[in-house]
Image 1: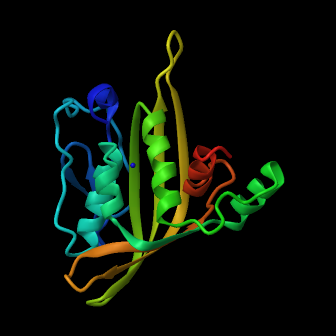
Image 2: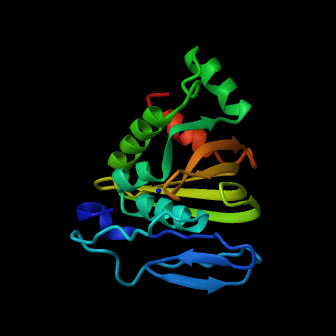
Length: 213
């Protein structure tokens, strides 16, 4: 995934096109499809009264647009709208083993919509700012469903009094399944997580830790 006190350092990036990567940084900037990002601090972050940018979820790209902005603006309602009622998160087996070994239980087991919203709500509350980068690798799509494979990066900044801010980065690879309902509105019904580097924890580890893991 930024209003009021959280708006000080909001930034997010969006990559959702086969041919190009779209960077969301208080606006969409077209970039080459090489997947290289140059980041900078925003010149005019949203103020406390800013409304979360949103599009009607009539296609895959609109869902990604809404997802990134929901994280950027800490908008749990808009975040929930991007997910289907039967949403399922499938963790990387590495994360399953981690929670089993450290807690004696797999906090990511049977992870559905309720667990997702609880974890994301806690992440929003704990964060001074959040940013998410989605870089699409491939897409299979028809009029009713789609499978998108992409690399992601979540960056969380936590402000600390009398200390330097703490910044954590989470990276991974996701296979995301979406489908359209009878009204033609799309949502994510499955996110399958994969670790890509031992140097970075995944989105699944991030959420699992937020639940008390």
